[in-house]
Length: 292
Image: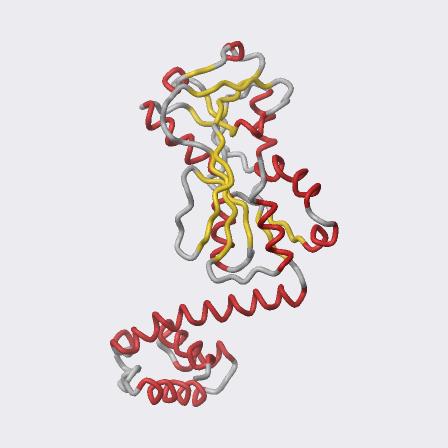
């Protein structure tokens, strides 16, 4: 079977127009017709009805079955092209969220050989976006933050550690002298919120829901941890942040959270199921599993 036939077929089901599909792939219309005929012979069934007047009903039930499977096959083939292309370039595309990166980068530099470090192509965005990139094959390995153990189809995740969240406030804030705080006490506070791609966004919602509060949020959700810290330092608001990210921060006080809900910052190393690690990537994954 020619995999190009599956690409033509998926496009034909999507657009329901032979001429449009031919233009899309820069081939003649008879090429598309012959491709569909080959598939019908291969599967010994009618995939496309000959009556093209009723375009919405042109695909048979067998055709829809093939369509759903062909989409998966095409995606796998595209993924294989990406993986092999990177392997040929000896490039390692690695996802590392900014918050975890600042906590872990010194350990990686210390524990990885120089030639491996030079081959790393680090993608630094939030864990939500990195998970999507890992699933789509844009990266091959990622360190991910989450509020719970990662259980995603097609992803193998190894738990590294789980860290608590703190409330952070300016040294000038009345709460700065406290060691602990409950979320109910924060109902009238103004929170500087993270972008939705960060785990902190969902964690803050969980704490607020548990406490039954709807505090004021700074309208612009900050896309970077350093922005959050600076706004808190200047007493524009308070925030929720993983404890390890706020050590030795001048002008900021961290308070333990009293609320007994099981929301933590969970760090995992993740790869796609079925992805074949090179020896260098195996070494990288082993070192990532040792992060503290």
